[in-house]
Image (cartoon, rainbow over all chains, first blue to last red; front, top):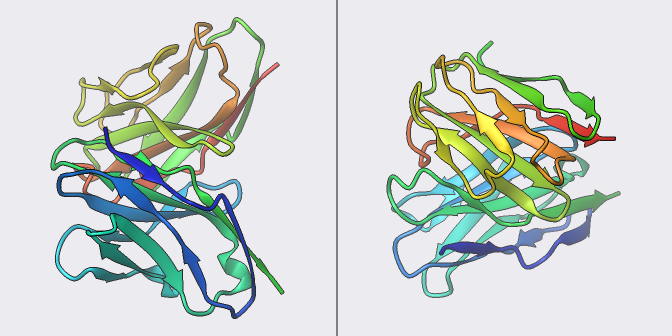
Length: 114
Length: 113
């Protein structure tokens, strides 16, 4: 069964610092990868996704992620964070076309301090 | 404006009572999903539906039931059989398959007293 591991449950950073949120998946077949963001007491919003093509994916709000097949990783990065980026971030994976089911990681809570 | 609405935002129920959570979308999406979110656990899939009058169990369907009589609506009933129902419930929809972006509602926080 596919699984997703988000290595850090909490990441505190200062405003304007760079950040990397780590995500690893376990699968021996082709994968499709997603990052979602959840602001407090709200639903989730898609940041970016990798389906095929370029391994560097750019998303909304200045975030990007790189698919690394050899390391089975899909880490999320932003070069300079803002207070408004404080939220919980979820990595998710589908391992086969038509499986209909996203599998989510447990989330990383990013806190940006002034 | 197109989107997904969930009601109510907060819901309290006594132990032993069934309760139904509403989810409506006007995005003309075929697929709809229900997730449960607990602190530190991420999202877990309860049920999903690809088309009207059809739905499938997710990973934690025990103690829950759904219906999909209309394309726009996918209500979730939390039954008294659900042993630990207190949680944040999220509804989502997508155009068709799960590779399409899932759009989420604002959630319903259910507390069992």
